Image (cartoon, rainbow, N blue to C red; front, side, top):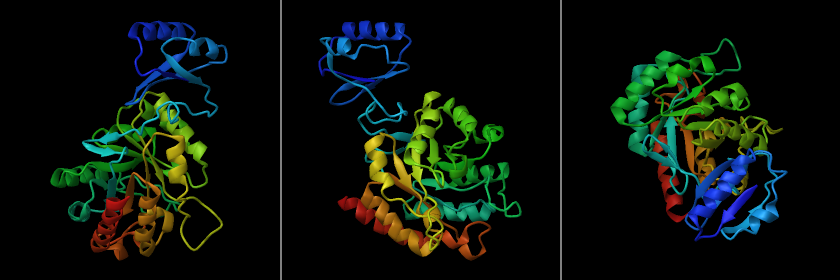
Length: 332
């Protein structure tokens, strides 16, 4: 249930309303917007008399929310959320470009790529330290050493770091990571989501390969229910019957999520396509659809990359893509 207050409301009456609701075991989320103040009532509201609340002098209207996700729901939070990632705002009109290699391979590689993507216009550095791979024989990442190298690249370039966590047991290693990524395979790892909910660190939540948008938002709800509302969603392509690309980039997810939720949503065209030649056009499509940012894989030598070389752009290709994106943003 949500309660929308009148623009000019009495603070004393609001305090009385809050005490009454909390006395019935209802948690209250207050969202102070430019145009209105919205109270999100969380808990068993079946016994709450909505007509009684609507009759109060300070109340504009009362609505019952049918969707199972509450904190991620735009009805609870009408204005776009802006997530601050170590000084880089994401959402609410702030466009973020996260770029870097699929996996960290060496000090020279990550620092070279970090400098290149920053020069091209990226404002966050992505790189895999722990790598979930389909084959147990494939390169699994440098693990803690990879995070150390990412932080060195951050020291040299000033770019905040984005990297993926795979297990609760690794959480201490992410203490200095600026944006923790939950990958597609872990989108419904609920114990991990609960643990991340206890953190105030921003979380990048990727959509599962076969997950619905409601399932994505419910996973975000797990994090937010724990107290961490710094969540960024990521559309990274879903599994369909099409085999021409690695996955199918669901462009429709962007406007739909923006209608349903106040959380920022970015797009990863690298994983969606699996081929570098498709990354730029799908990045532009994401911008046109209203995405709050992009995550693009960039490698200084894709032919020799230890992970996902075919979908990685060279620094020159990335520069060209960013310039095209910036032209689109100028007229969006």
